[in-house]
Length: 267
Image 1 (cartoon, rainbow, N blue to C red):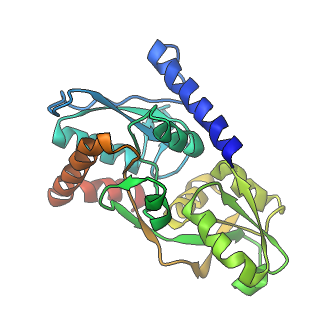
Image 2 (cartoon, rainbow, N blue to C red):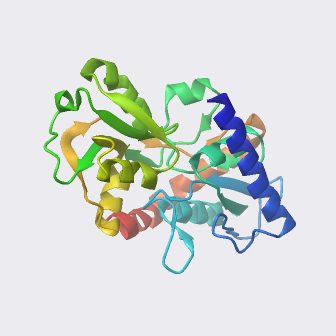
């Protein structure tokens, strides 16, 4: 795990260095978003790390634009509060590593608010979306209960709430777990029959099955109670940014902007 984290940190640093030097501005691995002119006391542009493929929260559309619920919420909040942001689309592991290493100021990537993360130094905003995690199987699978997973393998994505959910059940129900770095590869492992199931955030999985035509299905009742997604910092010096996010989130919920964003992607 430590070796993987160091590698991810290097990837994040390289990606951010490329943007700083101007060599990565047109690449698909990063995207920038400027809000209204900053009115924060620091007057800085805040670097926000995001995942690359986490539909419908963040992804690249058919026009090559980086879009999604998280992207639109960040833009709306930054405009409401008058601060500037630069989005870095790095992938989950590299995004987390970038914030931990101080190469980015905050993470907005469908990160579930958990006690374990808080204890390890994550400082979360108010929750901005509640999501459950569900077990997903091939569309022709007859798996309908946790007991049906005995002796089989379950695919998960590294460092996610879905991985934690699977880990909490594997000993009780006798299945093994294989960890992947991204969702698309995890989905394909199930479609190809190498894993009997995978675990993913329910809205993400529902969107991917619908828009991607994936030969997968969500199993009824094989889900947890869910947890809120939060905007996260890992350095107390960035508390100003967290406070602005919370204030802006409250404002866009009050004026209806938040509901419009959710409806755009989930209804």
